[in-house]
Image (cartoon, rainbow, N blue to C red; front, side, top):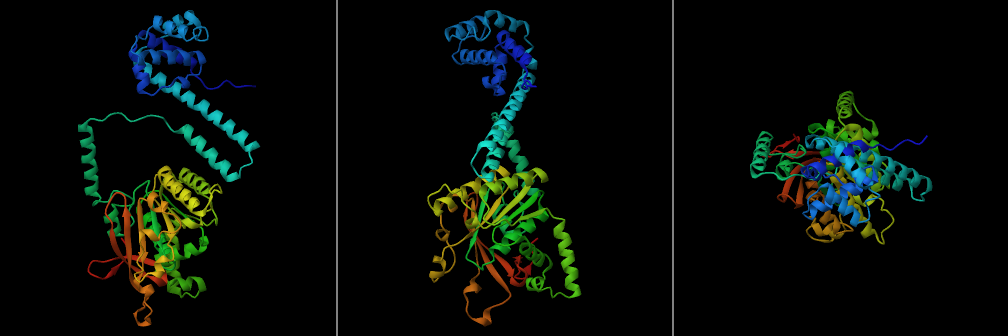
Length: 449
């Protein structure tokens, strides 16, 4: 049995009749961004288009002019003729109810589009030669396009805007100036005003600098201080290894002991406490290697649907993401990946921290401190990023054993900050337990937050 598509044909008649009686109703329709294509009955689409064209040309929108316009465009008969247009006047409703009618008509149109999209997805799935991930990503995007409302914003008066600014300032004062996602690292939060939703943050360093450890520390701190899930994509390290690092930092237990299992009773108690705390935080780890951007999008959409909100996405690391295969070079692939990660941040409405390798040029210089030009494989990484920050451990390059220690002060340098200041932040790094802490102003290392 063939089911009739969702429609509100009688409301369409009533609305068009109301426009013929009171042209001001057409203004209300335009205010709600009603399009001719959203009418179910083809004749109603033609009539509404005629009304819109007459209004745009400055002519009165009445029965006589609509009939004339349709006649001149050879559409009068397909629109139902003069008799049908006259009947619309009898079904007219008050202009007061017009916005409700418009909303209903648009809702039915959206349902029809959803059904059409579902049918297209079914046909493409049955006959496509594309990979499953590409089909799924296309399907999710198509459905999201349907569900988005096409409603623009209205003008605001200067007074309304001023009141919004006052409320924002009051909120900032209550939050001690941090309006974004809190990382728990005071100096970093002060410099960035918190990590902001929709921002792409590149965290780059040479190997063994601790960028994975720092990203995990940030993820853990964000999960403690902000609503929403934290998604971690580990392309190089198994999820269990990532979890061991989180446990080590949370409990301050030597990571080597977690690997060997040589823990005493006190350390086992600390392990259990840390594990319980971490288990209660909304941290999700995916260790799929060679993952594609389309898969990251899909998994983040599902997680956001389950949890309601994402507060942070961490990707370790950018250069290990598989390209689409459509680019001619790896540099073009990395450029495409970085652009998509920026889109991911905006679509998921949360900051995305993507780790990145630096080129070997850093090792060839006398001054090993990284620069923006050291970003590996693509200058578009810098262009797409809202923040680029580097981790630098001077002690790493010191070959004097007497000056090596398990705890050291490291530099976190913000070399690009699209919406704020750049500068250098000092953190304390305890290598044995992969813990990064804030450097207390009096010089005594203190835990972040």
